[in-house]
Image 1: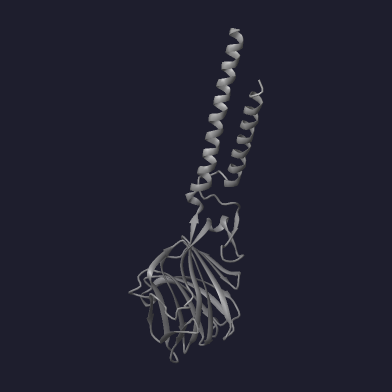
Image 2: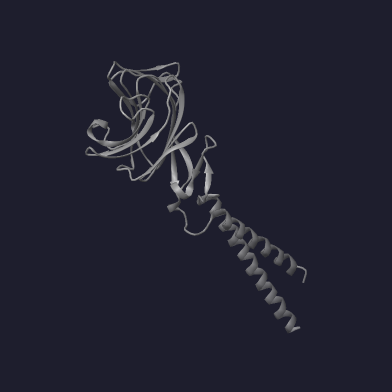
Length: 278
């Protein structure tokens, strides 16, 4: 009789341990599902299109929309302009400038760090279009040498015609990278700039055209610019944050952890059900 009681107490203790373990496992699964942001795989898709972001290269995971402007209300809120004439025409942000004039506009309401900057542009006339990012001091602008920008050369008397140059300048000390790209006036292009720390990727029409590591500034304001008698349009501007894998728990792939916790939970439940028969 005593032996049976000991055996029953042992089973009861084991059952209790299994139940507690199962509760802990399910609690961990709930914690992981709600509070941690593990990447599902080494490549993920942007939430707005099917472009692939390489997590091994950029160390990014989920992106969150921070700012969006489609100019459908006829107003460019918080866009500060320098030079030229800026209007919203047919739900698009329009800039016009005199021959030889440089015109630019900055979104001055917020700075950004680790982000995706997307939009559409159309240079009807003029020779250069610029995507400005990580402006260190908006009151100084790009003329004071504290900024990063991509200059898209449609035409140029030198060797820069049909090219893209990344500029990163600090006190007029510049580093840059140049790639070839054939542009056409009066054509819409979709751009996507990914700024992660000192790393930059630039996509045009959903294709990667330039990547660079080592820009001077890793955060700041964003803007647009056109040059030399421009008529230019911009539309569908968005800024999204991107999280770094450095914030994740190292060495534990998220979905492998989910799988392991799921297996342990199933095993614990099966053992508990089997013990109930005795």
